[in-house]
Image (cartoon, rainbow, N blue to C red; front, side, top):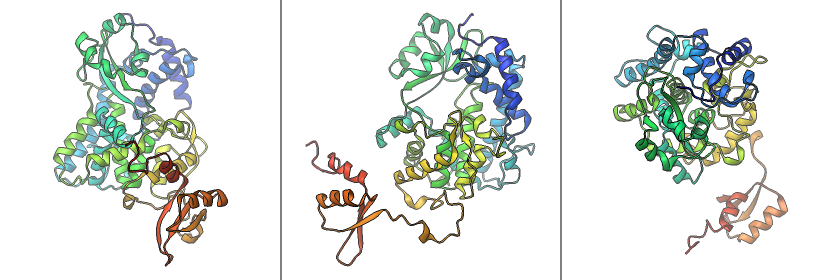
Length: 440
């Protein structure tokens, strides 16, 4: 069946050659090829590279694979093998087997990432990261996170779509992915547009398309990994990263299904040492959410962009994020397709830490400090003023205006600190949120 807005074979081939000529990923060549092939789908959608601003919104990974004269079943099998390595690790660890390296059955590191060849991990923490990482993209988890944290995230999921019905309804991949369809999902199922959420796709009559449920800026995979590392530790961060990798690879596999989500549920049911609740998942989803007014500050890197080697520093974002989590010196480099400077992103991360409810979980007290043996007194924030605890709101406002400080510290008559207030706290109070009778 003819489907419009699918990229021509010759453009796909030309763009692949261009991309392959300059892009290097911090992984083994075979994995690099699998990820570059997938990148062509997004480049066709967005009119990047050789597509020259012409958007081919119905192009799928299957179209790319066939245009490059690759064997579809072979490519799917290789991608599934990468997923299976990670799932087998999780199942073995849950069954009590000693697993201290992220290696597959043949001894190759997960995803071909050389760092994993020697790095030792705590399997329990990797499982915890896989659990949270696989759940945070779940539409129900996102919706509940929006309710709890009063934030806008948006989201959706992939479905198997009947191409004939899609054309009859004047829809395409662009409209399905970028408009809100939450209220129509049940109708789409009844009328045959949505064939199912998992199964084998017939490329002649079906497509595996993302349908957006609710509008919103989404979540950042970069922020999810880093926040997990800060709240817990680097091994939990690696688990979140691996869950995102499964989510990427499952988009073109022998059987289309939510493999990272299914793994989360298996870990949640069968891993007795999880020590996490859904509240922890909601918190991570909230911290990974991209604020509407700060989208330009927050990267959302695909697996390809996380592993893409910066030519100047010979570093990739994945390794730099890991260094940041562990308090090591970091190299400034442009991150994701947005080309956001990593150090600016890390400043954003530190500001977001004020939203963490369980401050005792923080793994590193200040992650932008390169010299961790410097005297702590040098790092003290001096932009504060002191008032007695019986000061009025008028006194606080006057003090903020006079001193231009960032914080008011309240003390009792014995100079004991009893609390503190920021300008944001003051605005929150003045807007009525601090009044227990507000709205009554």
